[in-house]
Image 1 (cartoon, helix red, strand yellow):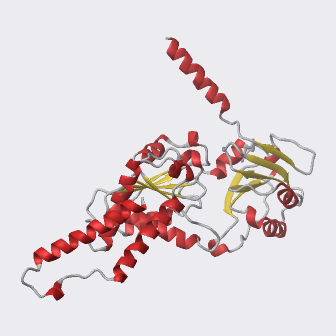
Image 2 (image 1 turned 60 degrees about the vertical axis):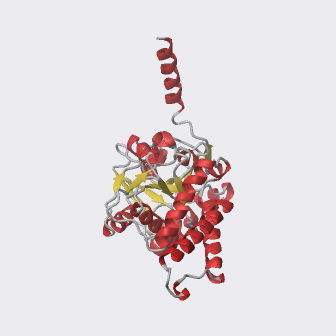
Image 3 (image 1 turned 90 degrees about the vertical axis):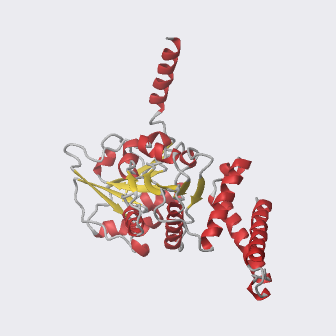
Length: 362
């Protein structure tokens, strides 16, 4: 890849020299553009940045399977990016479009048909860091993939970087698919992204996804509402803007509270719930990697949840469910219980296999 990019740059430099010679016949030599050491170094730096982005953004499995066809696609992207920086930006009237896709809690079988179709149509995919590999594996090989480099202290810059890449893609006439975990508008900054692209002349298509706030409890046998136990559900985030702590709602016995992105500050969160009147024996559950093969459920109480997570460790992404709905279907006497694995769709898979066998016999 490095060799091909070098050849691309070298050919571009030679073509510029030839054009200058043809256009400047009879003109003073000062009109010719000289290739300076600085411009050579700038080209080398550009190549290094481009290659490092490929290595950082592409999932390991896609890197391992890279083909010559992939190389050609990437070279076209590289050349287009280089030309754009030189001033030959494609017209905003190009046929590019942006699709914000909710990928659901993690299992690819829980994608909507519309989301799956959008992924298959993508030229450029911009994915959240926590989108699991089974969903990334659905992306066609011809598409370029970028994974958000979001880590503590870099979340805002990583978000800006993805938006800039998406805008470059639609301006170049590409189908850009922004894959977001869960649902785009449930603590996914989907509204901000919609507003950004619309302000630049491209109104996104937004496809819903099954939010983990509702599906993770279901897969953990927790009915968020249940007659005579819970008549309301409140979805909150444990992490506010710029890392601000949550100011939780007052305790209501018939309410189920679902707290997304909260496990990394669990201790402070529990104290804030106590301050709002939550009893220490309130049932709760930690739900991690819902619908994925390594799903884990920790059932406990507010009094013991910190000790449970400290002893069992953390397996992000996860959420916390608080309320009496947690013990409607599952009873336990221990301080906490741990349940490993996800089998929620196994019976459907068996049914599909039998149906296929019957159809083939017919």
